[in-house]
Amino acid sequence: MEFKEYPDREMLALSVADRIAGQLGQHLRTSPTASLCVPGGTSPIPVFETLSGADIDWDRVTIFLGDERWVDGEHKRSNGRLLRRHLLRDRAAAASHIDLYTGDERPEDAADALSQRITEHLPITVALLGMGNDMHTASLFPGGDRLAEALASDAPPLMAIHAPGAEEPRLTLTRPVLSKAIHLHLLIMGPEKREALERAQKLDPLEAPIRAFLDAATVHWAE
Image (cartoon, rainbow, N blue to C red):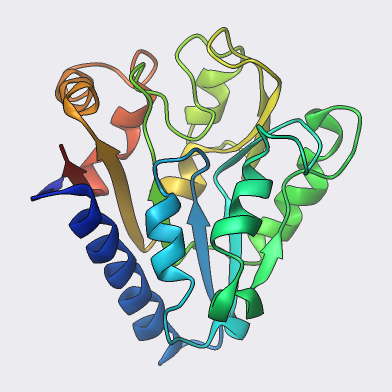
């Protein structure tokens, strides 16, 4: 694990966006396409807004979320809504987008078809993760009903998961897909998240799912 501390959140957002753009651009110099996996929530919004203006060949990049709440795409809790408003704009509007919300009644009904679509873009070129104070990442929550399956080495790319810490059913990328990203970043802010990160390093992934990704990750933190 590489740990990077920034003097403030603005510098963190600018630096992370620049790092991601650089890694995507470098990959595109030797490969026809690239893929970018990003988290939901409000923390990455400043990164998204900076990254959206990066001068790279976005029409060769496919973007998808690490997880989605099973709500309509215009619902205020939709990660896809956030993505469309803050990243899929400006130059990045040219990127392809795999929407994890399909309109099916249950996330279980969409998992197989979406897994096939995601598989076409593996390994992920750049994956940006977030983390909750409970040490979950994507929708890999402690206490999730299928957490052990989603952390297994033979897990499918996407799985539906229900957890006490989640208000609605979720669809999430799994450990094998996220951990095998060529470049893996974790974005956290504030003292509570740093303390949670320190705790997670001493726990099993079933207790602290983010632990499954730390060894390969570059962690970006600001107060």
